[in-house]
Image (cartoon, rainbow, N blue to C red; front, side, top):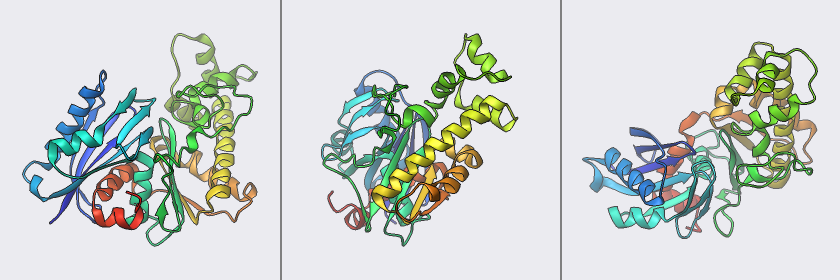
Length: 322
């Protein structure tokens, strides 16, 4: 049997797995992303690849990487990952030098779109978008059966589309008014703090925000909303409206038949994230609205896609530019 190794590199965690061409994962490793130099990170990634491929290294066809942030697809480098504090990390060259196997580096949500199109909800669908709403917001886009890449491999950075022309909140990338700055896992606490200034009702969440001392987290906002806190419900409703408008922009740009949604924030809170989007976008789209659904691949979508992208047959079919 032929195998491939996949890496899913997020803002805080790096996940590795051995898998086959059906997308089945047989071995896993999960570690916190090491802080410090790019060299330390590369060593960590190489160590995980060795760990999951021990005993079957000769049967590994290639290594695929799905990494959050801006990449250079030709160099196979992570150029800028604001959440993991990585920049100009030549991962492809380091992996190929260590293992003498071909390696490909994609954005993590692009990898998830590959997985969705090959073995997920998008199997047999030529026009689909995967949107990940987690620590950040990203997407992978397939049009007419081909993954869109762009000149550097970044034709999918929907989280950095400007949804607030006044630029009231700053994104972790340094830009202002970006979608990610308002409704991602890292953004929604800042958005809640901003909205709390104009809220006059009774809310334990507002009391915590105004007391200072500690920063609230997205999990606290969603928990409070489930418990009926009026301010938390207000924040979640405002965030849902922003998400729906951003999804409508995606529909009008790419005309997908299906949008699948993943990422930790959405996967843990589908009734407050995915469901409102699905309900609202038919009233916001110029193009015929697609089906919007939670990914059936769960948190493994980017990792499965990283594995699949390492197989030459998958790359040649979906990503011929590589």
